[in-house]
Image 1: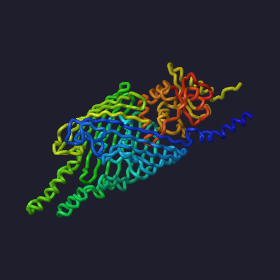
Image 2 (image 1 turned 90 degrees about the vertical axis):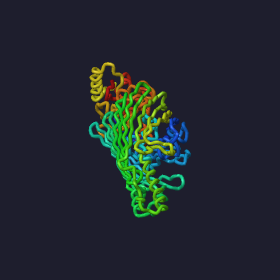
Image 3 (image 1 turned 135 degrees about the vertical axis):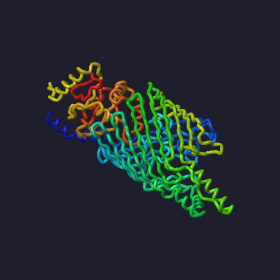
Image 4 (image 1 turned 45 degrees about the vertical axis):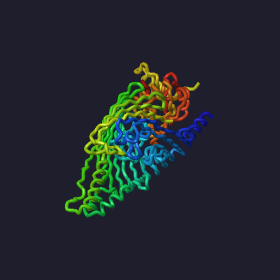
Length: 408
Length: 144
């Protein structure tokens, strides 16, 4: 009798496991958000966390809640040990300045083996260390991810397929992710940014408290918002056509590469990252780097940061040679040249020194305050938007921010 | 009267040896007495509890079972095994959840409840107060 019970127990063991709460169908609804306010000591441009926002702080107002505020919800469904799905919706200020929610992720995941998973749908782009959680302020120490590096790729997701494989080599944990997809961004006024034939990989290595990630992506990029200008330039003369070919973002191959490390043994951290974005267009070829370090004192984590972005391509362009042209043609040519030169000032060249602290004052909620001293350089307007005539490249400006990050 | 199996005797002996060198140790990581898993290193245990590895070293599927959030035992466990404060653990799981890479371990209330669930299921790994050990579970790491 006893032996029979033991045998029955053994025979049932796998089924007991399969039926256990750890593997049975389940769903969860979770949320995250940031309530932020920023103050700027300047008014001739807007500072913002992303170029995909309508306005920021500075010209649009000395105080702004739009820079860092957002609310997100995530519905996760797990059908069984293999199949799961996730839907993440985020509301934050968009380019048309409203907060209409958008679908950040919507994908189905198949866990082929405990180490290999495949996802299809809208997926986070795994570029940069914090790329896949850059919208969840609670997960990182700062008020926002450094704009000099993370601003290079404003997209945070793509529609496609990815595969993720992890393996351990002694105490080294490696995760390799490959992805293909595309992403479209509709701009106010009907224009759009299209990233087609998007493909890339990301490799994350963890050894104890050290995490490193390298990632690469390549895409066919089209940004048709300036079509009228580039059409006029191309129609002007042969040189104009050559310039339009050179600077228009019309099916241009864009490549991004990033490498970052994070060392976090518990009571302090250092994090450093470099990213390069090469677009072969007026969007430029830039390299951004940042380094940040923090020390944990109980519930407080004071930190310092330095970030810089510079251009690897020329940000000045002599344009069309106007010598010997009839006055009317020369005036039109000069206008085209001026506009092109202005476009090239949007290639960011900038540095920022940051100091701040995170305060984990209650469960699931962190308060952060941060002070940034930002200097656009070399004639560039840096990462600033809504630039006004009074704006001076090379002058340092300050932004002070406070944000309440939470997860629920 | 049921005699303990050879494995249980060895496990008890191993624990006695571990405890002798450990002095003030109070936390012990356990698997079911039916599990073939041997002693584990702290980093192997941390990997499973942080959702970074889904298997025991022998390849069998592993599911972590946590103590209730906010319990001193849980805070001490993560402090010693992963060098993470409760706030850092929260940030870790927020990253895992909101990137779709995993869900935090399920929880049980107190050492007796953890021990009971672990004893019943060889796929589970938990941690309890050393004083709650009995023959239904096998210690695989003493945390000190």
